[in-house]
Image 1 (cartoon, protein in one colour):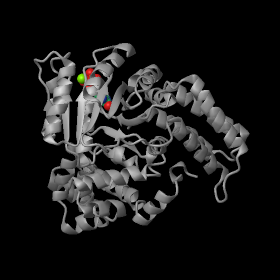
Image 2 (cartoon, rainbow, N blue to C red):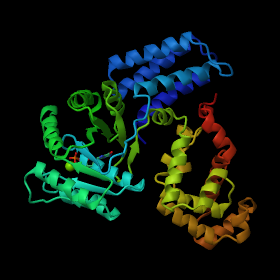
Image 3 (cartoon, protein in one colour):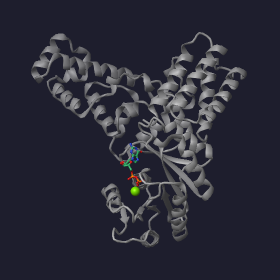
Image 4 (cartoon, rainbow, N blue to C red):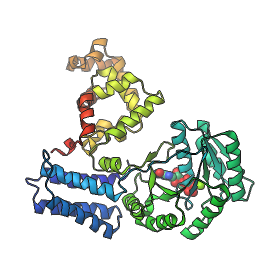
Length: 448
Ligand SMILES: Nc1nc2c(ncn2[C@@H]2O[C@H](COP(=O)(O)OP(=O)(O)O)[C@@H](O)[C@H]2O)c(=O)[nH]1
Ligand SMILES: [Mg+2]
């Protein structure tokens, strides 16, 4: 998950608030100090942090909670609102209006440009667009093959010529090529051999002139933290049709600094990169991002992900139903663990569920491929009755199952523990509750 460390620290601050007796001035001030510390540790600019926390403090002390909300709930709402504003407030989705829509990506070498081009191409393809990718990187010999390797498994065509030395010519020819093919979106990956803003913007101007993109996308490496400000600002001033992808927000300690610095320039952040795999890209929506960051869960994100998987037919409708209802026995648990493996890291998925967030015990979600195989072996030694109604499994049955499957009683117990834990988890996920939570923010995870 993006900015995990910052998220944990903010979540802890809010938990402190939740646990406190009364949300008086001293408590508010302490929580604000924790928030400040968390943001500064994530490399958010100190001046911006002070501005932000001053607003939070003022609102928390002055405003009256709306009818029906407690003081604490209200403060959390304020923190959520101000952080959301801090990151740009509204989502600015990428629009595909013209046919073809031409996108040019720029960014300094190593920022994650080529990876992001591939991710974006796949993202758009998943949404039903026919996409063509142009490699106009004449600088790095491997660039063309890197792109091909990333997108060709998905049937996305790459235009390029490793022998050609003229980047502008390549870009122009690539765009012509895909125009003739009638694609919906053309994405041009540029060389980005420059290390500083001026050269980068010069390169952007030259290619832009040749291919007249509808949108230029600057790819910024999230690990540079608040230094992203200068790049984003120079870019924003150079082009009115610019948007930004911030990459490497997985595991970066400085990602918060990068995101907030870019947002501070007013340039729209459209996507974030959250890993090295092709699917590790997310449309950036400050509201959803902050709610997930604070550990409030992200129901919308979860449902969207489920929907996407359903489209890809990796998950069957009844699986999703089961997942949401939490009615299951051991067989279902196995099917679900399998299904959830397909959905990506289990923890990432579960973190989107309100009320779970960071409180989730590590072992509840760590079920690797190996463990699944062991579970299969153990379950093969169970009777139909035991699989359908695990509650009947007593100690003598555990011993028998362990012996039969060549495992140990410890392992059988572990499987049963996992089952009980998951059952509890999924029980809290019935549909009625979900839809209710979608309407109203859920603060359950914070124990309020
Ligand atoms: N962890 C992580 N790595 C990334 C991400 N985006 C790109 N990378 C890695 O960053 C390195 C440089 O990426 P590349 O796309 O070649 O950068 P380019 O020089 O700008 O085209 C590669 O090793 C990528 O796998 C991301 O979102 N998360
Ligand atoms: Mg590249």
